Image 1: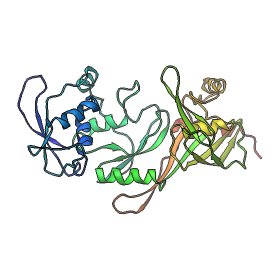
Image 2: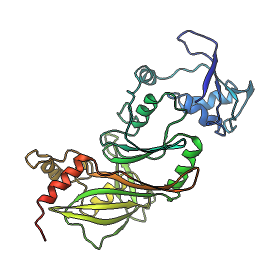
Image 3: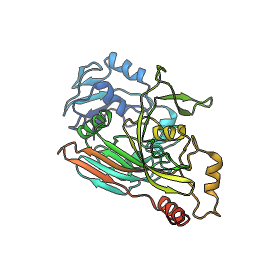
Image 4: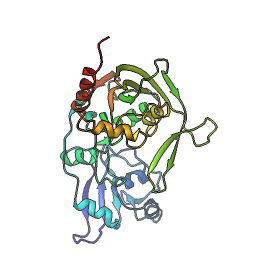
Length: 333
């Protein structure tokens, strides 16, 4: 955590601040360091105050590329933030802890419930990371290593040190992690269909909402996406799958499975909406009121010890109850 060590005004108007760079922030570029501390200030303004010399490191001018070091004093000139950001600061996220699967000095792995965004934005005022930071004000750093969709439950990694954050994000980018999900899909999944290698293309709906579709290899905006599928269990009218992703594209599992004619149960973006309504009917107890997609297993190398870590988050009770109930309807072989 970077400490404010002085301010030249005690009034409500913006004042000059001095930040002391700590060990966690050491090595960051000045522009990135400032953007973390000047949330709500446009990037163009951040670069303008650097170029004008209003931002100082140890009382000297610096460029955007300058790396801050442990113990540096950084001068922040008076800046005004947007009303929206000011409102957010006045009404912080409620503090909340989440079930912890693993925690040490470098990282924590939590079992995220469905229905909670991982961070604020896009109409969501706060998410897991804002709630964690509020619950742990003493934490020097809490940053998301990767993301899960709001309606997806399961394993989510949070870094507690900047070195761990970089190491883990590099592993995700270089595909050195192993990520396996459990998904319930409509119909009888073909046993021979074990690999889906189809590029994905992101686009926006007229209302600005983000969507993804399967595209062709010739599409210049298509991103290669690889999904491995294994049948875990066959249920009446549905199949429980173990899905391992080799690439981490937006909505990858949801779009890949739906593109094969087997959408995920409860998916409100790419699913079979008539089937979803049937699943939600209370008469067919227990009704499925969420998307059946769960981040089940995660493997990665520990950022400090390099030990191979293997985490597992069992199915949440509402999903397990649905599978157990469906099994009762399965005739014996």
